[in-house]
Image 1 (cartoon, rainbow, N blue to C red):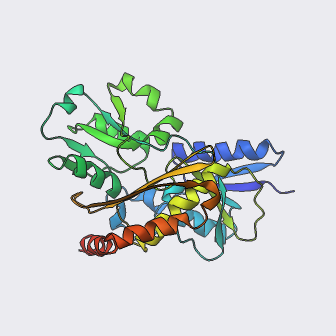
Image 2: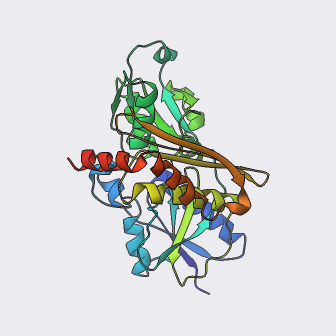
Length: 305
């Protein structure tokens, strides 16, 4: 039997994720090989992600490799995977979720005493949530892999930058922050990106993916991605969605915000995991009745200008 060819981006975090999938497959006595592939999102670090005009900026190169039979499966940070996949490609695996939270990495405790701060992030969602809570602050764009972003923070006059906890933890950077003169704080008030902390696996539809999925991660990702799919409608928008699963029940929190953070439409609901299949769609439709559709139209206009 031929080894399963695992496609991945080349960043250290992406390689870590691919190696994790590789270990899980190897534990089932399945031979594997990792094939690193460059993505457009990694090659262009000058423009904000939403200005690149590419749906799935970090996944497109891997999609092409799948369709061209260069690889059998592709491993992604699931939050980067568009909710609408190319024809012939399906989401086949969900690894156990890590910590889904965002964290603020900063240089000095004085950041909390300042009236006006400069915070760095390349995420529209993180920008909008931050400005919603701290409208007086300035937010600057930050791109690159986690190592490069930490380096840029250290070398800048910014007060702090926002990262995914799971990304820093899995890259083994979290424990190195102190040595770089940095501290961090979990932003438990900021709703994570849909599927943040989950590693997803895609393949061509006909590929028989061995079962290495975590069921709770699959349920949470399905709810969060449905919520995103209904609200986003192919547009990059500041949307947070988190389905926390405990003992067979789900606590869902979701929000969509204006780009400046001044408007925010939120929903929170509890339900059983047995009712998860269309729940993300239902929750998104409730947000639409609260005015989310008008908010998205405005976001699209602003991004296109």
